[in-house]
Image (cartoon, rainbow, N blue to C red; front, side, top):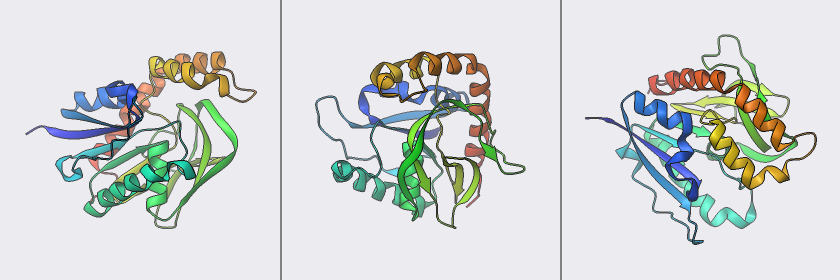
Length: 232
């Protein structure tokens, strides 16, 4: 029986393309991918989450929304409850950017606006012997996480935690899935909102130049995630 992985997107219009390198590399490893989108183009909200126990791995991707937004709690709280069930069932979980922030909230941490926007290509300050590459990685966010002592922080920047684990879950603030095509689509939607000194052109050029390295790092990250960074 094939391994199964669930790809959860918040803005459903991105469809399965949201999985980028992560989806492609999981398929190389023999995973059968399923997709669930929450915020539909017609304005409806799909909270009929798939049964988590049907999957060997769950990946929750980013969003243009904020984990602390009061206007979005009517769909964020059900999603957090679903993620809490994943934690209780000890199902492997990879949270990317917003997906990592929701995990942080579920385990007793918090999310708040950061002192600056991180956008473009970064390398994190990783702990010695960190099994996940320090970089380069594509990133784009204006929030930061505070994590409880139960989480193990493996990498940070001056903004805050960038890589953490708890149980069989991994949270990363950056975007290992990011292909140049995905980044271009995100910049087309929100690039004009980037604060100085960031520009859409500079962010894309840096991303394209680092594309081979970020793909290789995504593969290394998935080596960790699919082997279980912390076994049951």
